[in-house]
Length: 530
Image (cartoon, rainbow, N blue to C red; front, side, top):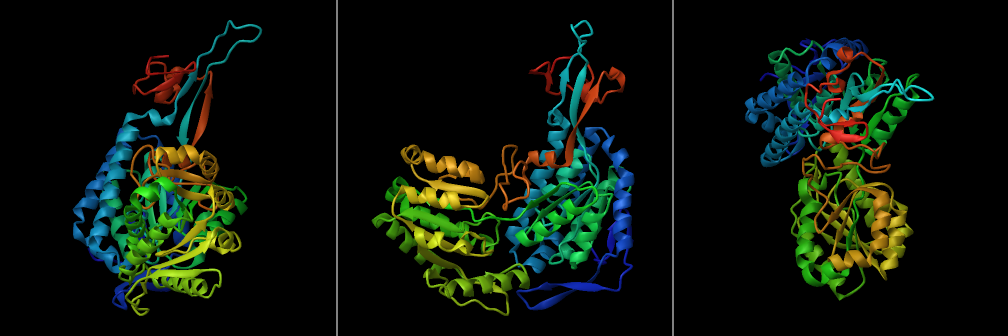
């Protein structure tokens, strides 16, 4: 495929601006060939206007037709072969097997959403039948279900150029819900975005989707994203990235004359608590798993374990020693782009200068600044040192973590109470350990979106039950997930029909239940007719 660097506005292309940029292969220190054009205000308006015009016809499609569209996207992605993977690897320094794993994830969640909307019960159809003879007042017939909100703006993640970008759950779940999508391509992997976007375009043509169901705009300036979120035709937006970027766009979304929901996933510290029973029985295995999670993808995961806490003991000291040894064996690798590498390098320099932190482990080999490489670092402090330094509760994106020595179980609770919202928390232990630390677990239930037992936070199972979210600042809205089929709930709203003629109701609310979905009928879950 020949890349153009143009905006993809429905089925047409546009390159109105002379303001251009290129992607860079940081590992090789070389710019990539294609020149990408910054989207103009007029092009952004065209993309959103097309989406708005497509909304009514797209939302009215039978779920089977939207499912066909999603499955066609998966087929077109597969048909790209290695082209998508090679470009993603060049733009992000991810090895090809990692890029292939991301593609597999796209195939999984796309097909999963197709099956989910075909089954249909996700609309949460509810029917309370009327009773005209009820006294003292007649009871109306009241029915409701979830309906799509309108065009959605999507901002892809830098660290997942395939699986959480143009082809990510944000885009696919919005399509599944019946919402057209305008994606703002990530400027660090614009070529990967264009290749993926053209696969969606081809799928839309194959399945006869309305013009404007999907558009892609390019841009590296903050103004491009700001204009997209401010556009009155956008009904909701989804973002994966930094706290600073997510919060800025969230504030813009809420400052609009008509505010819109802005769902940002912004990373977290993901604490790990090592309880006594686990350290006594398998300290080496935990150390190995922890360092593998810490350094996976050069530590560039929003679920990276940034804090590890244990009770001061011989077993804890052994774990520290084992983890330090394993960190020393990590070979530095190129980060996603120069911005992330610069922030990581500055953060490490800051931590090395802190008197309250002890450096207990680092990569044995030096990192190359020219190739944007990151070495792994392991610091140590006490519970008192941690509580005295609020910056240690903040995410530093990359392969770095802090080991925290605690004097007694009460220290665990003190730290947990100080935690800000996090995507996950992990406990390693025995069932007896869990019973002995119930108060800690209760605190963590308030603080995180996913509680993990004897595992590691890096890596998400793509399934119906997964919740990838958490209280602020992990996300802007803890009720919703950016991964899994519940992600659709961000882009729908309840609509209620009172005393409506049966034949004019949405199919899911009609008496005969023609789709055979599970509904709540007079308070009972059933597939029966009303």
